[in-house]
Every structure is written in C-alpha cells, then in structure tokens.
Amino acid sequence: MSHYRFIQAQQEQYPVRLLCHVLGVVVGGYYAWQSWRTGTWAARWAM
Image 1 (tube, rainbow, N blue to C red):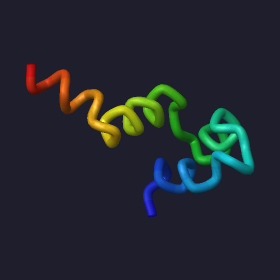
Image 2: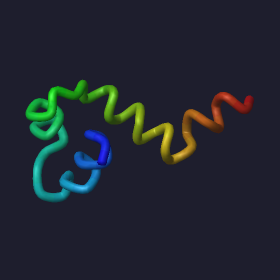
Image 3: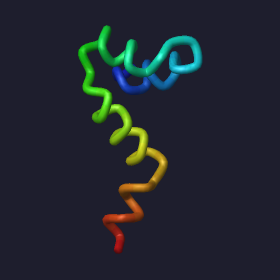
Image 4: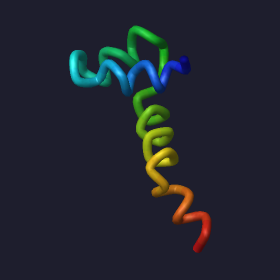
C-alpha cells in the first residue's frame, strides 16, 4: 500500500497533516495525488 493510499484510508480517524508528517509525505503531494485520482488533473490535461 502506498503512503497516499494509507493516508486516504486513515483520514477519517487522523488529520491528513499529521499522517503526512508521520509518514514523511508532503501535504501538497497528497492532495495532488488525490486530484489526479479523481480525474481533475486528467481532465485538465485533455484540454
């Protein structure tokens, strides 16, 4: 499981910032990954 998937699975129980800090992940990187997964970035690239 990737760090980002772990954060996604645990975000209801712990703050995203805390999870990112503990795992050594940049918060912005997590949100960028989340945007990419939901198609926001993919839709922008298609334009």
